[in-house]
Length: 145
Image 1 (spheres, rainbow, N blue to C red):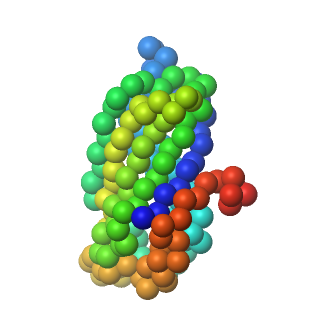
Image 2: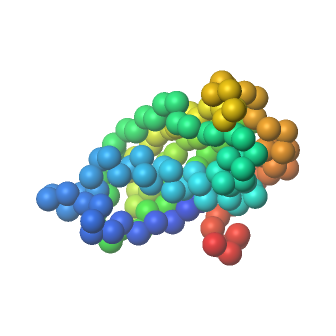
């Protein structure tokens, strides 16, 4: 298992009239935390694309438990329970201060060959980076982000 912690402050523009985070923004929060989790492993979307690999989202699920509000500092846990194959599944847990769970979800992404547009196995370099970091908990502070 690989776990990455990312902190994010809710901005005013991300809230609705009720001062709650608009539900559609949770997918963006997942994307931000997932991107930073990959970056902590030395993997970037740019590097993948430069090597002919796309990683589009195949499915995205979100369960809303409690609302997040303007100026809340959220802890987003990105959890990877299995090494990537053709697909990679990221799970998310979002917490407000005082360790209050407010949202859970997951995203499944698929590795795609940019030349053929067909699904492909994850590049060996990506699998190796995950293998080196499995059973490791990381955070942006530890990675000086």
